[in-house]
Length: 194
Image (cartoon, rainbow, N blue to C red):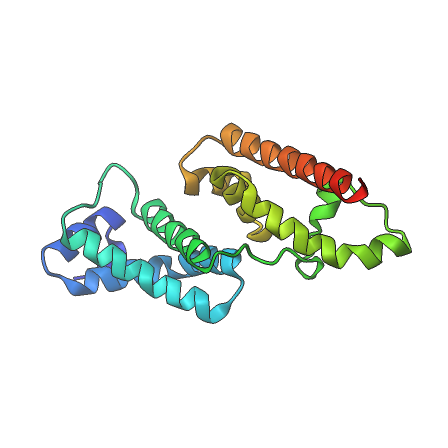
């Protein structure tokens, strides 16, 4: 039986009927996209591999429990499971990914707070620490979009697909996240000066 010619749905049905190789084909078919999506969020090879494995353990348990919803496509469903496991990991670790210049993105450029003077450079490291703490204070939906967009470098279309909202909703959450960060940072500056 040639599994390569089967659709994802057909492979899921074959797996549920006891054809273990059908799941192997699904993993092979989608592993690059799923692993890459996880890695973009966690930026750690070993952690990404662990979460990738956990994702397929959960996929198998869900399939065997008969809880797979056939309305959705297989890949978006697995990506959603992987995304939730990443969020769970960050919640468990109670940390936000490091947002740094090394990834080619500087959140201060987006926030528009700093002109790079010598004084600013001296203060900036502490401010990065403060910013990470402030990101934790954002509502979870805003924090999630901010991390996926600027840390995970996902497009708004990918974010919308993963979070199961419209692109406009994802854009709106990002706008609110940046506005809230600006307000919190301005309030913090006022508190420090008074």
